[in-house]
Image 1 (tube, rainbow, N blue to C red):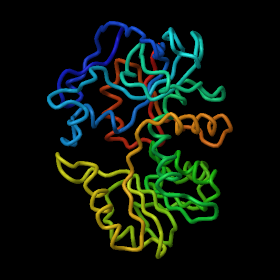
Image 2 (cartoon, rainbow, N blue to C red):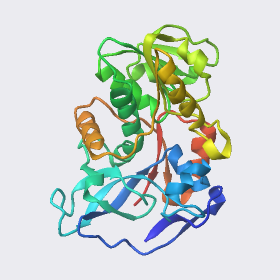
Image 3 (cartoon, rainbow, N blue to C red):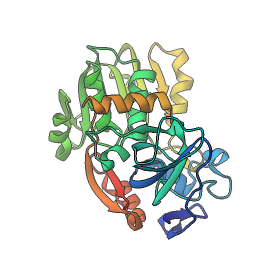
Image 4 (cartoon, one colour):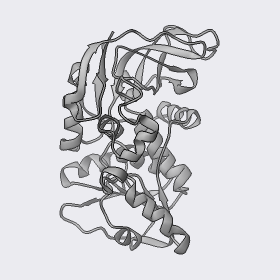
Length: 320
């Protein structure tokens, strides 16, 4: 089968479109023919091996998993002897390591049935970004109906899903994005939009979900109610060792000494969360917005586009 592989950390130049063996399904695993694969910043982090502290889990000298990609949607090709929830021909989606390939294999618990109202491309866009948005609002932010919620990065891959989820949970939502994306964020359900390129952040909020990652903690805390919650889900400060987690770590260390709840966000794949996402998508409460698709050989170009264009919503890799 064809796949995007990587044998050493580095730039997109280290990625190769090549032939690899098709995975062999294990007893508790599901093999799918990939129709579409999701793209999010975690792909870049694994490709570069940054932050360096992450290599303790991902591989010290090179990635443990040779094939790139985390999220996939497709059709079940084969199932293991202990698999009970799926059978060949089922349409599924999930957080699947090695998704940038014609076939991908993962344990049964990694998959859910694809919502019938989502295309394969939309379903592939949902797992990592959707789980991050849902965990950030529900589990870490403890969102409540009627709260004033500020979502920074509201037009991004996680942010545009968070806007929809926050409205589903009954919040009053203010989205922060650039002016050209304001109309799209309002269409997602935001009550108000702040254009960060021309407006200062104002207002008082019970919950802030920051997926943009560059504003100082003091500035964000000034926007909170006295006992408000700040959830930090983005950021690339901290150098090679702590890129993306430095600000969150400082917030967690400060939290015990202030009235505000300051939390970092790390949403790992979770079957329960993915199941809830599937139900919400089926009910129409959350729908990924796709801005562009790339073919499997174009993964390096797609990664560069994700980093430089800051696209509205999600970009997806199509596999046929």
